[in-house]
Image (tube, rainbow, N blue to C red; front, side, top):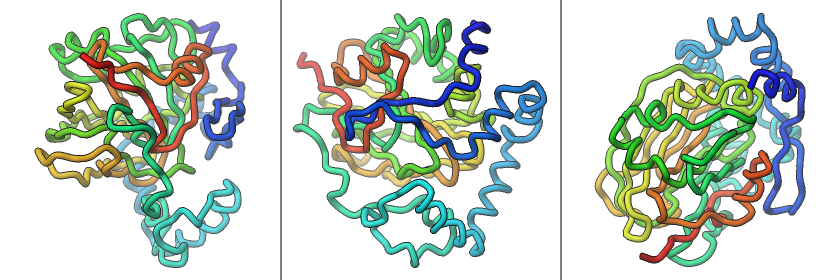
Amino acid sequence: MFDSVKAARGQPVEYFNRHTGRVEVEQVYGESFLRWAYESGQGRLTAWAVARRGWFAHWYGWRMRRSVSRLRIRPFLQHYALDESEFAEPVENFRSFNDFFVRRLKAGVRPLAGGPETMVFGADGRHLGFPDVSKVDGVFIKGQRWNLRALLGDAELARRYAQGTLILSRLCPVDYHRFHFPTDGTPGPARLVRGTLWSVNPIALRRRLAYLWENRRRITEFESPRAGRVLLLEVGATNVGSIHQTYAVGRRVARGDEKGYFAFGGSATVTLFEPGRVRLAEDLVENTRQGRELYAQMGSAMAVADPR
């Protein structure tokens, strides 16, 4: 495994963009720091001592909530070529960088694919999809496997989903950072599992997938008439001090309704279906098989419910 880690060191982060039909290279926010922090001995020590800590995320979040942080918005938009015509509010209305970061979008700019039987991606991001999580022998690099008991913090749930279908969705700082429900159903409360705040960029996860289940996360059990009991996880990361839930517990929601949002930073969601309940989109499975993420926006097709 460590030979694989060494081989991955310094490699660009590539993904297949469903919307352009091309393999693209990610413009990694803070790439030089990330590579130093996770690909060098001194950097890893610093990440362990400082960057993964909750107080560091709160401090950075405070900086991004200050009014002076508004000055960062225009350069950020220009550098990453974001389309501000999608924003529900004009850029001038944002009082801080974090206001911009948790922005809403205009109605209709993320149309929902397919019909009621189609499960949609709940967030803009780069996605990996595993039809049977028990058969995975490599995530980002060979030899890394999912530890559901650690991820879920519940042995019984881990047994129930041991052969389930798992989708990992990684949100970059440049992405729209609100997350949504993939299908109709009724959500329960979001259970907090405390943890640290490692990066979830592939630069870090190539070295250690376990960062995902060491990080702070929220887990929601979601009852769907088409997909059974679905687990929805939001995973915090470096500079993400909090995960905000905006839905009402126990109130039925529709496919595409907002569930919540992440404050500043990169982050991830995990969607976990019971065995045999859904069939993943072919391009998601194929790109995952090649060890490459699929970029797709919220509302794009993720899977189809298998009729029972």
